[in-house]
Length: 71
Image (cartoon, rainbow, N blue to C red; front, side):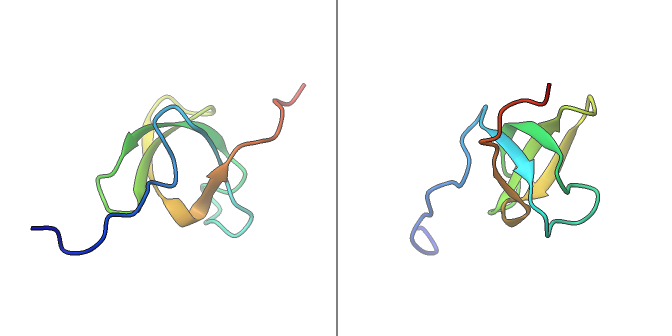
């Protein structure tokens, strides 16, 4: 039995995500790709462009990256 209504995920796999201005400094303005949904209810595994490892980030620290790539 489900504990409550299921929320639509904020991100889908392979979405590009960017750290928000008010995110902790370690995530702020970093851009990466969502590679995992979970393990927590509002947590995503993100592989950032500046590192080779997956980091787990709260969804409210991130937003969809709609900016064009830097030149």
